[in-house]
Length: 146
Length: 264
Ligand SMILES: Nc1ncnc2c1ncn2[C@@H]1O[C@H](COP(=O)(O)OP(=O)(O)OP(=O)(O)O)[C@@H](O)[C@H]1O
Ligand SMILES: [Mg+2]
Image (cartoon, rainbow over all chains, first blue to last red; front, side, top):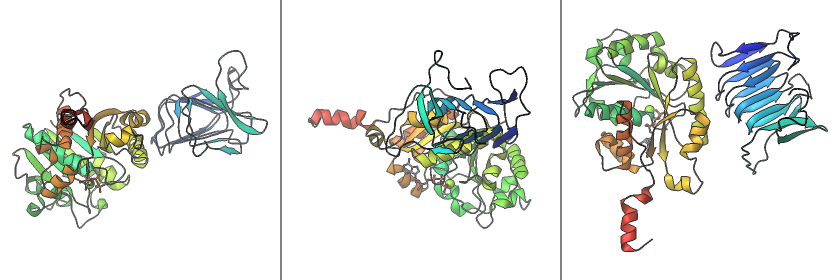
């Protein structure tokens, strides 16, 4: 599992997973842990899963070939499954993205509706459309990732 | 050894120069020795806001390029003993100074002054990099507009990358009535996104325009709301604990008056 605390320039953080570890049974790809808030103009690009321990602010971007999990407010642009993997998900404590992409599906919140949900939500592709639901712990299995 | 504080914003016209002049004036009025540094080379303003334009002989580029000594270029304020200004050059551009020269300049000023306050130009290019190069602390100014907050967020990210951690925030030009009506971002909305400590909030106040045109920072007039708000910020910069001011103009004198004469 890759672990990066801070990028060198603070502006762009990018990398590629080194191929999955045999003992990693949570994710079948490499995972990067970003231990800070991504502010406007900052981006993370990673071949694998990305977990952000902070917010993703408007003007920030996260691109991952795997899943994206934001342990905070997601307000920027995210792209999960960037290589075309339609089974990937995006999850956030407050899912409020400017734009959300999974594989080659691009979605954005409706123009005049502002729903500020104060609970964790998960976005995934169901029957060919990006669907957003409240995130439930336990019980139902949350796709392949969680 | 003094402290170097850069006043920055990303977006232009949100009140950096006004804030630099007022914090500097306020600190000097408290008895501190203060140097103000205008790094907006090519668009020099701070001298005008302080009413010192006609005293400029040398500027920051003269100092960094060795045309004159630092002491020769520093202009003394006309009212306050401890206040000094190093003006920007007007006929050069931002590349006339390097970040390394700025670091040296800040070091030199720090040994002589309690506070060195730097007025940063708008933008994120060389002017910004120069302005923050020698700073110990940063203050980010924003207005309650989505674009200004976005730029403030970008700036905070760049400051953190340059190891200027935990910048403080000033929200300028807030209009409590518009916030109440839901037509303007509120303080909580802004803090929610930027997640930094609030140094103070300045209301929209036409007295800023009036005092700026007179070349007398509003902080010298404690009968104005903006003057009081800046005074609170000054005391916080100096290390005092000051509660946040209630900006709701309706709770002040006028509301009482209205009650008495039976309007509300
Ligand atoms: N609280 C306020 N109420 C009313 N007017 C204000 C307030 N704050 C600033 N202004 C006005 O806004 C204008 C811009 O302010 P100022 O020059 O301080 O901004 P700045 O960030 O330094 O701009 P620049 O990016 O061009 O250097 C000035 O005309 C000033 O008088
Ligand atoms: Mg200015």
